[in-house]
Structure formats: C-alpha cells, structure tokens
Image 1: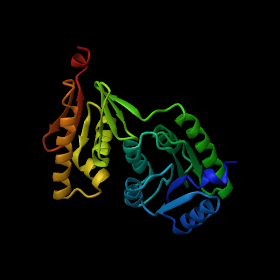
Image 2: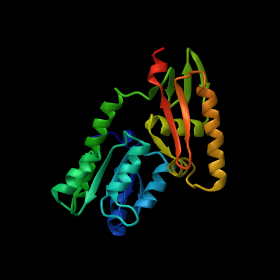
Image 3: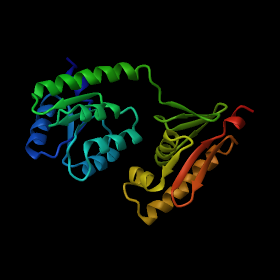
Image 4: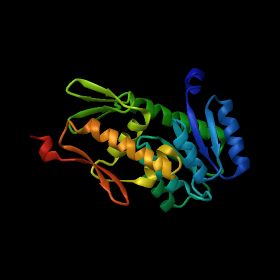
Length: 240
C-alpha cells in the first residue's frame, strides 16, 4: 500500500457525468487520501485540467460535450506522460483497443468495486514513479537545453530564466517540433480564453521566445498565417 503521506501528494482529475457515481467515487478516493477533483462533462474536465496540476486522470468514456477518448487525446497533447484510465459501461473489444491505443494505463468496466479502482490507481502510480525516476524534464531545442520544470533555457552555459507563459508556450511548441501548433489551441490551453487581448499577449510572448532563440540559426519559430506557429529545427544548420 502507498503511505498516507504519499497519498496526500496525489491529485486526481475524475471526469464522470453520472452525478451519483461521480460524487460517490470522489468521496471514496478522498477518504483514501487522494485529492480528487470532479468534472461532470468532457469540456469541464478539459478546462479543469489546464487550470490545475494533476498526477492521474480517471475518465468516463461516454460523457456529454466531449467524450473520454477525445478528452484523453487533448490531455496527451498538453501532457504526453500524464497517466490516465477509462471508466466505461462498454466492454467491446474495439472500445478497449481504442483506449489503449490512446495510451491508457488501465480500463475499468462498470459496475466496479471502489476497492478495485484504488488497487488499480496504486498500480499505476507505482509504474509512474518507477518511470519518472528514469525520465527527465530536459529537452534539447537545437543547441539549446530547455528545462521545462525549472523554466530555464541554456546555451553554452549561459542561462535565461523564462516566465511561466514563455515556458508553457515553448513546451507546447517543442511538443510539436516541426509541426503546426494551432493558435486557438495554444490560447485555450495557456490563457483559457482565445479573445483578442489574449491573442495579442501571445504574439508578444512569441516575439520574446524568438529573441531568446535567435542565437541558434538552426532554430526558428514560424508564423503560419491564419493557423498558428511552428517550431522548426533545421538539422543541416544544426550539424554545421
């Protein structure tokens, strides 16, 4: 069993549209020491995820506004290593396969016992803990070293401390190296709202990131007109 001290540090996002089941499961998990936030549809779950920090997501497959599979995909775009498991009333092979293809850590079919959920959560957290001991928050962007956790960009031993917004934006861009980062997606992920003022704010942060990265000619943030941005790494220049 995981210690009570450890459980107090675990934050869980629970997305379940069945109000009674959701509240019952949340209360049970909190009684076991897990900090649990309940969302009752997929869109609420997505907004909650981008506004807070979680260690594990439990997603009902069939939810209004956004189903669990779609929500899982969006979560993985923001946090590729976020562990999650699905709750579902279905037991079809295609549904199970789709869940695991999305990278699900587990899949529980309703009805289930509360104890079973806790056992599976503990198993996932043990796997994640073992994996994180080998993982790193360090990324290479051309000649730069980017520490996503410390929000520090380093080149030839010289460090630049990024603001939170700069670091979040660079993280999204580096998640999609040489691919399009959609403007609306970045706005909703970081600023929550894609209004005019937030859009202008993002343009300012893009300009700041370009200034930070200009010391390496192999690294460039392109403006894809009407669509978004692309972090491009020119490997030929990188090797020069």
